[in-house]
Image 1 (tube, one colour):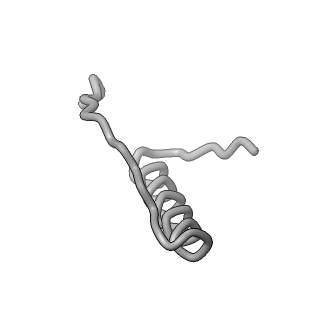
Image 2 (tube, rainbow, N blue to C red):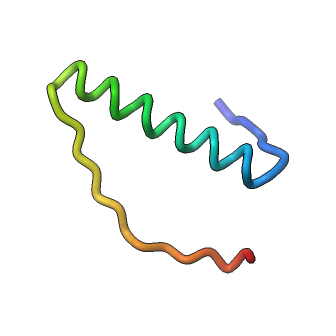
Image 3 (cartoon, rainbow, N blue to C red):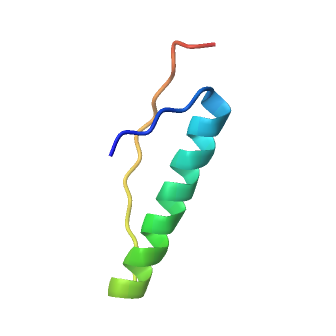
Length: 45
């Protein structure tokens, strides 16, 4: 499914909600959630 967001705030909020929802589902299913994040710097300012 493709979703279009009209600004960075809406995109950021949706991404944070998706991340939290997936983490919650993983914990419910397997008892834990593991993630590896790398540092990324946006060129958009």
